[in-house]
Image 1 (cartoon, rainbow, N blue to C red):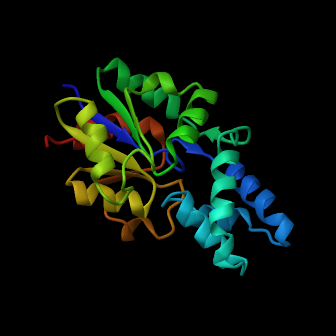
Image 2: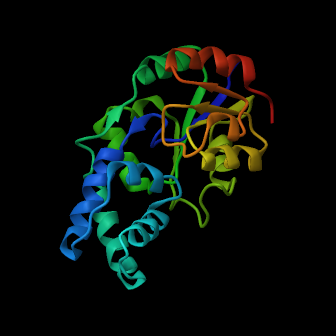
Length: 217
């Protein structure tokens, strides 16, 4: 049975925080500021605009810098790939899902061009049939429109969403889609406080969870 499996990206399939951290600090260094890697983790999830807002608040820089830093961030983000790594077990899990004829897609708040750049760099693009980023539509997660669009591209059949964060959980809830929570990503709260269908810490467990919990929509 074919299942439509849609994935978040940052914190779910890849650990991109070191690259985002480096970009952020390079941009705010001229203003005498810097953020920690832990802060970077906590700011990720709602797209670049929200990231920049949270960053400015954290280092007490004026909102007037937002537009300029947002523009610089979007440009720098395109080549911020060298310190990003794929989480252990991801490639094997994706290959197992593909060999069992499941249809795979990406639904992320990362802007689509940086999304494709890092997927290409890590040789992950070939595993997916559709890609939706934070600027692909007028809205972004937790609005369910991106997830609906990804699922529509994958055709018919049972579906499931895989992510690592509160935003991902809210998106799945809004779309009425089962949610598998990867616990080793960028979540900000305890696992039990995040609504989920099932949780996992090892990607070796993912194919079986997809088979068990995917439902028709």
